Image (cartoon, rainbow, N blue to C red; front, side):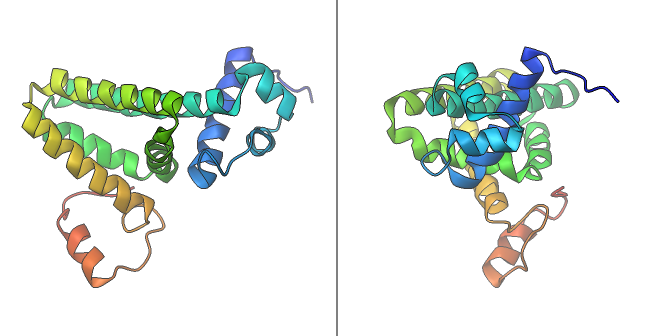
Length: 184
């Protein structure tokens, strides 16, 4: 049986996916390029050859996360270009806990100027996308992102979504405010 070699683009995508997994678990400071390499099944020097630094790899993982959210919003707007329509699409992403944790780790690592500039640009891109797709006001966008941040935190804590922990009174109340949504 012969092995199919991945193209350079496929290998890079594989490394970015492994980076999202690794960084979503250990954060920027707690993850090494060696851990990412092991997850991807490649050598650590190969990771460095493609991405130069851990910081560049982290930025690629953040960019991947933002692009996926942006694409999800754009696809949802084709069906329903309203804030509730885009919000429903975001619910579908909550099941991908790695993405939620990656976002939170990106926000936390934003003290580093190079990372912070990149993360803020990504957040700004999502803000601009929401405003352009829905025509919402800045106040409506603020409420949308505030709700999204709450959902991101709840999903990251496993209050909602796959493998959710047993609910406590406070978390049952919050989760109960979303009765029609499925957290896959």
